[in-house]
Amino acid sequence: MLDFVFLTKENGLIMGPLSRLLGWILNGIYEFLALFTEDVNGIGMANIALCIILFTIIVKMLMIPLTIKQQKSTKLSSQMSPELTAINEKYRGKTDEASRRKMQMETQAVYDKYGTNPMMGCLTLLISLPILFALYRVIYAIPAYIKDVNAMYDLAAEAIQGVEGYAQTLADFAKEAGLRAISVEKFVGYDIGVISKTNIIDVLSKCNENAWQSLAAAFPSISDTLTGYSEPIINVHRFIGGLNILNNPVENGNYFTVGILVPILAMAMQFVQSRLSMAYTNKSNKNKQEDPAMASMKWMNVFFPIMSGFICLMIPIGVGIYWITSSVVQIVQQFFINRYMDKIEVEELIAQSQAKRAKKLKKMGIDTGSKMAEVAKTSTKSIEATPKSTADYANIARKNNNSAAGGTGAEENQENTESKDTPVSGGSISSYANILKNRSGK
Image (cartoon, rainbow, N blue to C red; front, side):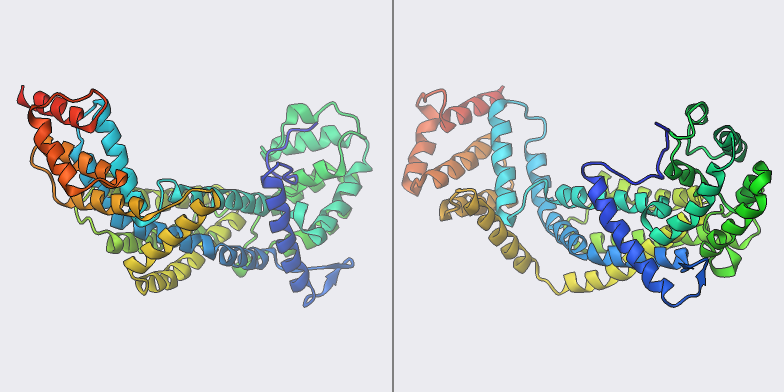
C-alpha cells in the first residue's frame, strides 16, 4: 500500500462515520451551489471556498447544543470554585488517611450540591473533539468527499495512467514539487495495477497552479490534456481577489500579496474570540482572586492566536479560510450565548443540574433521598464557616457523618463530650478526632 498522510477517505471506527457524515453535508452544499453555475465538461462547478464557508457555518450551528452545555458547565464551575478552593486550603498539608477521606467527602458534597461532577466539562470536550478532527479531515480531502470535484481529478488521473512508466515519473514530480503527503520511496517500484486512480488523485489534489504547470511538463506527451483538465480544477478553487485556496498565502518569499490577509485575519479573529470567551469566564467567576489556571488561560489566549497566524503562512489558503470562518461564527455564537446565559439565574441552573443528575441516578437504581441533600448542605455550610482548630475539623466530619446516619443533636453533643476523655474504638470518627487533637498538641 502507498503511504498517504491525510487525503484518502477516513475509515477509522469513530472518525470514519463522522467524516462521511460531514462529507455528505459538504457534497450537498457543493451540488446545491452547482445548480446555479455553468457546466464545464458536463460537470457542475461551484466555488469550493464558498462551500467551505457555508460548510463551517452549518457544522458550527449543529454544535450549538454542545457549546451551550459547555457554557453552563463553566458557569457552575465558577460558582463552585470558592467552595472547592476552601476545601483545598482546609486540608492543605494533611496527608493522613482520615483527612483524605474527609476531603473527598466534602468535595463530593459540593458536587452533589450543584448537581454536577468533575468530568462534566471534559465530557463535552471529548464529544466535540472527534467532530472537529473529522471536520479537518474533510477540509483536507475535498476530492474524496465531493463527487463532482473527484470527477474532475479522475479525468486527469486516467490520462496519467495511460502513460508508460507513469509511476516513476509521478514519484519524481512529487519529490521535486515538495508534495510531502506521500512517501516517494514506497511509491516507486509498484506495478501499474497496484497504484490506483485514487492514489493518483491524492497526489493531484495537493497541486496548486504552479504544480500543475510542472506536472504538465513532466508528462510532455499529454501536457495539453493535463492543462485542459487542470483549468476547471483551478477555477473551482479560486476565491476573492484571484486567490487560489490551494496556494500558500506567501509564494516565493513575497509577503506583499492579497494572500497575506488570510493569516492576519485568522490571528485577529481568534484573538477576538478568545477575549470574548475570557470576558464571560471572568464575569461568571465568583472568586475574584487571581489563580494560576486563569493566568495560564490568559497567556494561552494571546499565544495561540499568534501561533495560528504563523501556521497560516505555511498552509494552503483554504485552511486559513476555514479558521477565519470558524472564529467569526464562534464570535457571533458567543455573543448571543452570553446574553442567553446572563438571563439564567444560578439557582435555576443548579436546580436543572440537580434534576438531571437525580434522573440519571434513578435510572442507575440509586436513590437520592433527603439525607444526601442534607449532607451536601451541611458540608458546604461548614466550608463557609472556616474552623479554627483541628478539633473543629473533626467535629464537622462527625456532624456530617451523624447527618447521613440520621443522628440527633443530643447524640452529637454527647459524643463531643465523651470524645475528650473517653477512649474510643479505632475505626470511629471520634478516634480520628482524638488522633488529630494529639497531633496538633505536639
